[in-house]
Image 1: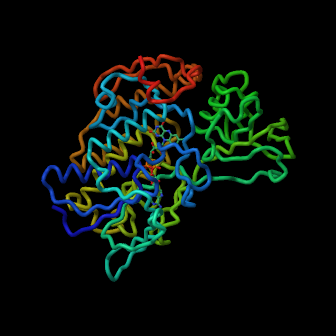
Image 2 (image 1 turned 45 degrees about the vertical axis):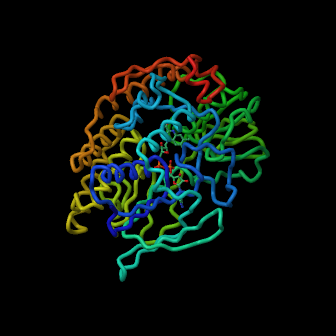
Image 3 (image 1 turned 30 degrees about the vertical axis):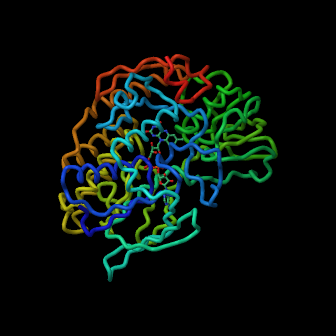
Length: 449
Ligand code: FAD
């Protein structure tokens, strides 16, 4: 049933689950597949979508992976994050809203994993500690630690797939005088509950997706004021009166923060919403991806195959939109490379030539529609090489752009809009309680009529 080839998959978040599904569906269709071993350091599957109250380190002194917070509701319509062969309709058996809370997304991801029978491949509470490649043996050596037993062991693999995500290691720049600050300082990775900041004046550094959503959470849960400090330009939303945008922070003195436009303010807390680093401490130097959050990470052919050692494959490392679909398609492509159905270019130069073409395209990207179109082209390029089902990517882009526009119309109510699934045509329903008044993100509350 299994060939003698061994494949290690690091992580069991949505990208890895797609990879397992790709192999399992090949096996079910009668193909011989490699022996697959998936190592996951958490005690369950789901990756980022597993909320934890912990910050810093977990019960085994491993860095906490998830950056999600209590009461997180998706800020992009679920219709842009629907697994092509597992619709939300199929999972819930009824239409749901377009912007569900984390609990609902997490339940959906779990359903996808269970329906595809992939849990059998995953070893939980196993952290990958070190991966190197032996040119002599033509094998990867993978050192893992069983966290419950506190024991390490090494295994050899022919391929390694890294699906450990890139939203876990905080990027924290220095600001002049920060050591004098009298209040609380944290990164959005450690933000768990907006209730902690009720009646407080809060400064958010950054104005990307995280800052925008945390600002709204803080407003919702009663912060006295929220100030977002931007580096290049303001978002330009119609913020509620309690929220404002200011230029970059230049200095901190005790409780006072000073900005580039000479304005200042006293705040109780500073939250860094300054993004994440691609961080792979478990990979040997010659295997380690070094990238910013971009559309086409350097050193990766097709944004996924490590140029210097094509038996090392990274999943989900580019800037994310339609993340579940991109993950799925990459997984299909990776599987077909490993099964020998896709032949990679014969030389490194040929791969580099292809990468260069994509990098030139990336340089021309200026705005969100350009990003979406880049991803569309990328998706189609990969789909063409596999038997992954085609789907209505134009329809998904349309929904995404409509949603981004509706945020400018009303940032508080955009989550009340409903979109139609490009897979099933079902139009989402409105949630029973408007987002601003909905304080209960439990699944049971969500699906009650
Ligand atoms: P992850 O979900 O990060 O999974 C990686 C897995 O690898 C984890 O389970 C982790 O424990 C494991 N791992 C890490 N290191 C090791 C190791 N050394 N050994 C073993 N296992 C390891 N996407 C959307 O589509 N819609 C949204 O609304 C949305 N909101 C988001 C909000 C926040 C706050 C964040 C942080 C992300 C959000 N995302 C959203 C993006 C989200 O990251 C993706 O949806 C998805 O989780 C990416 O899947 P992944 O499998 O690539 O990575």
